[in-house]
Amino acid sequence: MSRSVLLIGGTGFVGSALRRAFAGDERFSVTYSSSKGDASNPRALAIDLLQPSSLAGVRSFDVVINLTGQVTPSMELCTSLNTTGIANLIAALDPERQILVQISTTQVYGTAKQADESSPLRPETPYAKAKASAESRVQQGLPADQVLIPRLCNLYGPGQTKGLPWYLTECIRNSRPIVIADHDGTLRRHFLHVDDAALILHDLVSHAVTGIVNVAGSECFSIREIIALCEGIVGRPLDVKYGSGSPHGNIDVLSTDKLSHLGSHHPTHRLEQYFRTQLL
Figure 1 (cartoon, rainbow, N blue to C red):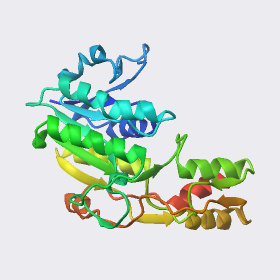
Figure 2 (cartoon, helix red, strand yellow):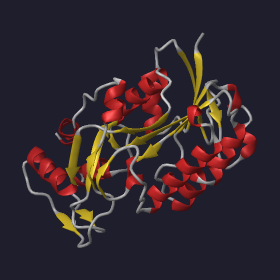
Figure 3 (cartoon, rainbow, N blue to C red):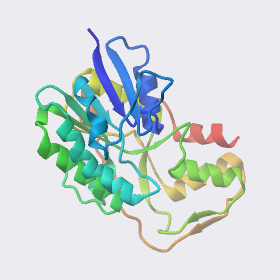
Figure 4 (cartoon, rainbow, N blue to C red):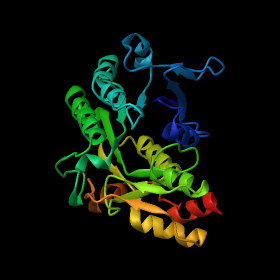
């Protein structure tokens, strides 16, 4: 008998990749939602975490994966989804039966020499603080063995409409200056292709993993290093304007030992190859 999975926010960047990852796996029956739904697709529900009445059907699923509350044009909406929205979702779940997968971010660690799943949280940006708040609410509101919190690093891939790789690609394609206004370009991030991330999440759900898991690849670059990489690909210097401040949230060593021990999907995509496909 297949397990029923609900992807809340399943039409977005990560949600679309997760639908691809679960496609063809007969162990799971996947339904997805967006705030508006899709009348042409019976597997698309209209769910808005800020509207409790829309959550009536959530309790019928075995696994609920919450993909909402990511970076949005409105920080107010992001905060609401990670506070009021999380409270509404917890109230709609059956804590004795359902698994909640609450997607989070490695940015909750803040600036650190080293970070693993047991490291203290020191979020420095409004987004990281919102995700840390969501984690806390989920951990307080549901039994530990019913919760999986994957902390994702920076993602990239086709269909992305925000984020650093997308921004750089758009600027280079359209011969626009690259403006890094809020720091000096030494911001460092770990990067993972969205399809690799989705396959890892699929494996975690398949093996009924609970707890906190860092989900990241081995690639870590500063913005200056990525821009140098792009300059090498296009064969010319790029027009880049940096600010003067120090960046927030640099992690020198992000541990993925726990993920490795679980034996999940090993990433196959590389950031350089992605930029080559986008820029050449």
